[in-house]
Length: 243
Image 1 (spheres, rainbow, N blue to C red):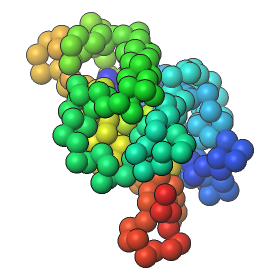
Image 2: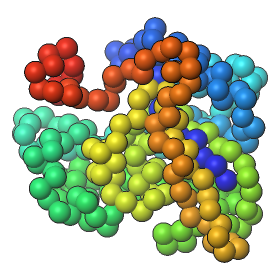
Image 3: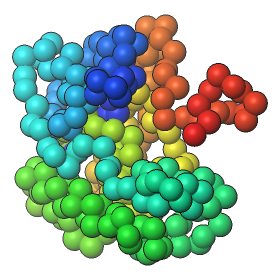
Image 4: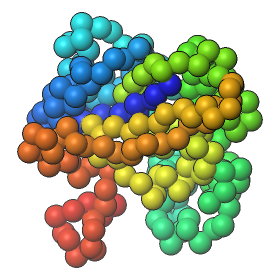
């Protein structure tokens, strides 16, 4: 089975939709997706993800299944450098999180006081339980850190969602800390991440990421990927986002 995890187009957060560039990106993405044999499509309940999916769905004459757990990963924490207000659990400064060894471990990243107070692991478990329910419906049942291929297939599933949430899904599939993904990877708007099962012994499947953050549909149309989700390459780059 193949999973395509797609981040929404360039966002206009003020209206929970897309910028003009985002709509252009979604159109180019749809030109790629309509050529695929897609079994099922799932979408976040948030407007920017649904709007991104709409271009593909219209061309295919199909609808998507809306899943609440596909919304952006929501927990808020008291970030050490901003004690006066809560911030997204996945947005920390490197000098605060990277020095703590536990954040690199799949079974320990959530054990610090900030993550516990923000009930981040509870949200993570809710998301991954919903994800596993969908995978089980398509024949793959979680068992420990791998999946039983009860009904092995070559189907393609598409998930329209958000960067922070995408990292949670990948963390679960690949059994790695989401902190490493939240801070060490960046999926540009409308990028496509592909994860495919490998069944080297009958009935035992493991998911393997074959591509991350693919934006070839944008380059094919001369469209530069949006900067959203990235921070300044150099601190003196005043035109780029700092925090």
